[in-house]
Each structure stands twice: as structure tokens, then as C-alpha cells.
Image 1 (cartoon, rainbow, N blue to C red):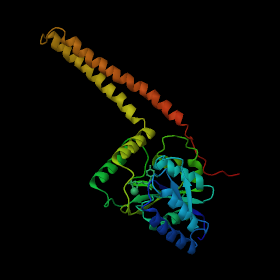
Image 2: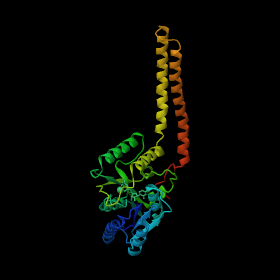
Image 3: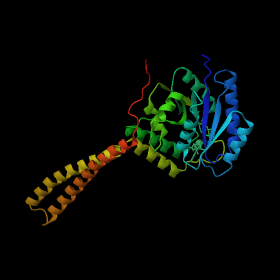
Image 4: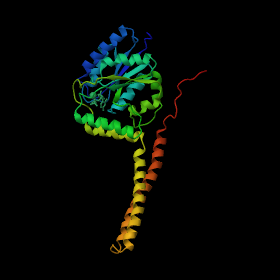
Length: 316
Ligand code: UDP
Ligand code: MG
């Protein structure tokens, strides 16, 4: 089985000065051990992507690079957010690596799961998703919002892997395909399943942040969830259409009801016309907005210009 392919680790970092030394230490130990066992090529590396940090993150990465031959660094021009930093790292290293694993700088993703990722890769997987087994270390609030998010995404028809964040392995082939997804609204968790190919899951236990604070406060988390939903689903628009349809149907029932009360003489003059128009116009407006929305939704999907298919094999 010893194919000895090149593994690159990609680690996005934003203000992570407190954890970097420890992260580099643990990952160095892991890579060295795997290289020694000939599970991966001696050319394997770890790449820290500095996402426009305001602290000493970049100087630390530079220093690590000078003292540790396994460490490489990528510096972004400014803070672009986790997803973009991750993509920048993946696209920069893909030509040197056979497989790339992305993980967080804060050691929340269990480093010991890396062996299993690589094993699955050798078994023929192009994508391996890291799925956290438990959420014991999370606060009730984080657990609750996160699970609500995954359920909502499923409900809206977005194909994402439950409890999978961005700890994943991708082969060179999968990364080459990822490059063709040109959208600006980047939500990798939603895009990677669209690539297809053989994939599998590795479960791991998520630890507590080693040091420092989460760079995802509630506001960022909500934005992230909202972007995730609106980048992948036009169902919210369809809901407006359905609502319009429902209200319009009700308005017709109301029309019958108010006409009956009108003719049986239980109303004051003028009441019937006003109530009927309020309901009917309201319903029609919502319906019309929904229909317009449908077209905007189509345009929205088109402007993404996503690849419509991906060729897996080519026999010639
Ligand atoms: N991160 C980044 N850019 C940002 C925010 C976060 O590169 O604008 C990185 C951060 O350094 C970490 C990873 O993304 O390696 C996940 O962030 P964090 O641990 O703060 O999120 P949480 O685990 O709390 O969801
Ligand atoms: Mg974290």
C-alpha cells in the first residue's frame, strides 16, 4: 500500500499568535511520524495561510518557516475571511501536493485523525470529510444554533455533510475541479459535495480551542449561515410565492364569506369592499413578488456560472 504520496496541510490563521507554536509543534510531530512510517512522502509540508492578521501571526509563520523545513507560509493581502483564506491555501499548494488536508489553527480538529484521512485517500477517496462525533465541548448555545443550521440546510435542499466543518482531505483531482467553481460567495461545505467523486467520512472528537478566542462571534456566524443558505437555495423565494398563493386563496374564501354576510345584511356599508380588496391585493402582490423572485433566482444561479458537470474518467 506504500504509495507514499505528498500530503500538504493547509491551515488558515487569523490572529492566532497564541496557538501557532503549539500547532506547528504538534503537526510537525505528526508529519514526521507519518513520513518515517512511509505513509506519506518526505516532501509533505504544512502551509500556514495568514489571513490579514493584526497580531504577530505572520512574523511567527516566517520564523517557523526559517527554523522548520516542514513549514511553508502564504500571506494574504488583507483579511478575507476563513473560507477565502482556505481556498487561497488550497489553490496555492495544489500543484505541489497529491492530497491536501485543511484544518483550523486552534487545534480543535483532532490531529490524530490525519492518519485515517490518508488511509481513506489510499483506499481511493478523492474527498474525505471530517465529522465531529460529539459536541461536548460546545456551549449549549453553539450546539443548538449549529444543529439548527444543519437541519435548516437539509430542509432547504442543500447537500451538506452533517456536523462537518472544514476539516477535510481533498485529492489533487478534486482540487482541480474546485478551481472551476467561480462563485464569489464561497461556502466550501456546500460546494465540495457538488464536486462528487468517491468520498468517505472520518469521525473525530473536537477539542476545545487550545488558546485565544473564537474568531467567529455570533454576528459572523449568522452571516455565514445566511450566506450558506442564500448561495445554495432559491427555496426562500419559492416560499414567498407559496405564501402569496395561500393568501390569494384565502382572499377568495374571504370574498365568498363577506359577500354572504353582505347579502344577509350583517355588515356596515363599505366594509365588504375594503376587506376584500385588502386581502386580494395583498395576496396578488405577494404572488407577483414571488414570481419575479423566481426569475431573479434563475438569473442568480446563472450568474454563478458553475460547472454543469465534471468528467471523472476519460478512456482513450
Ligand atoms: N480564520 C481565518 N480568517 C477569519 C476568521 C477565522 O482565517 O477571518 C481562521 C482561524 O484562524 C481558525 C479558523 O479560521 O484557524 C476557524 O476559526 P475559529 O477557530 O475562530 O472558529 P470556531 O472554531 O470558533 O468556529
Ligand atoms: Mg476554532
